[in-house]
Structure formats: C-alpha cells, structure tokens
Image 1 (cartoon, rainbow, N blue to C red):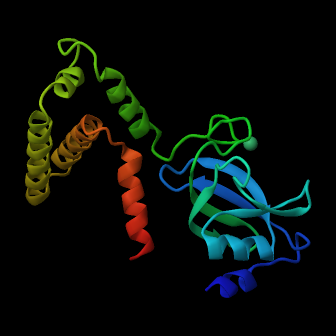
Image 2 (image 1 turned 90 degrees about the vertical axis):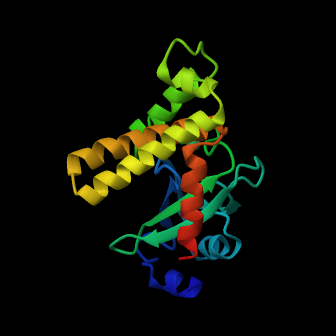
Image 3 (image 1 turned 60 degrees about the vertical axis):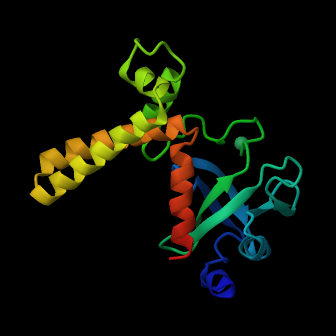
Length: 204
Ligand SMILES: [Zn+2]
C-alpha cells in the first residue's frame, strides 16, 4: 500500500517534491501547506505522524519534532493529477509556529454553524438558569438532558417512519441541538464524537 501510493505519484513536475495540504480530520479546517518527498511520505505512512521536506532547512522534518505539536495521520490521498496530496490529520496542539491552530487566518470548519452553536451552548454553561433555556438545561440533573435527547430521538424516528421530510428536518435539528447540550453536560465536545467516527472509518 505504502509503495503503491508513493509510486503512483508524479514526482517529476516538482523536482521530487509534492505539496501537501493538511486538513483537520475532525472539522475540515485547512491547517497548513507543506512539501513532501518520497522519504518524507514513506515516513509519514510508516509512523502515522506527518513528515515534510523542509525547503528552508533542506532536510526531513517531522512536524512537531521540537514543539511537540505533531500531526497524527488519519488519511492521505492524491488529487486528480497525482501531483498534490490532501492529508487529514489530528493536531496535538497548535499547527502554526505563531501558536494558532491554523497557518491560515480565517480557516473555517466544514460545518461552521454547528461549531458556533456548540460555542454558544458552552457560553451558557454556568449562567443563571433563569436567563435561558440552555442555561436551565445545563443547570439541571443529567437525567433532564438525557430525557430531552431521548424524546427528540423518538420524534426523529416517528418523522422518519411517517416519511414527513419537513418534520424530519425539524426534529433532526432538535436532536442535534439537544445532543450538543448533553455532550456539554458531560464535558465532551462534538470533536470527540467526530474523532470516534473517524477512528471507526479507518477500520471499516
Ligand atoms: Zn504557520
């Protein structure tokens, strides 16, 4: 597999180097662009940690070798011309040397509104329960949040059975919303769940 991917790429155009776009495996944000050669790609595939060829230092570079901010490889694939790679990875810390998560300012996740909603729910946590519905749910016992997610799950199921698309859309939105509240109550994030899905995908 490793050799097959490496040999399938067009290394001639870039004098033995190919650009690699690194994307966050959980939310689709573009994190950075680097360059790889045959050795760096082989090391990436073997170690499951992203390696590059540093054009400035003219040597192999394991991302995070000094900072500890490694990129754990999830998947890597070539584009249509086999001369650019798209790498999905999970960063251990900040990817950029400036300390930001992405080298690209304004890089947005694939589902920005869902992430924004999660942040809004987190901001309500600990606020006066009478101030909002979310604050009230988060201040309640876990069983209250569990009940809500259970009810919404049943409503999604009923709408799906009835074949009512408008109803299904609305109930699915309610379920996602209450699922985010349940996760927040358990001090978990959407990224934890997406990470679990991505890990399963690797073994499908
Ligand atoms: Zn950077």
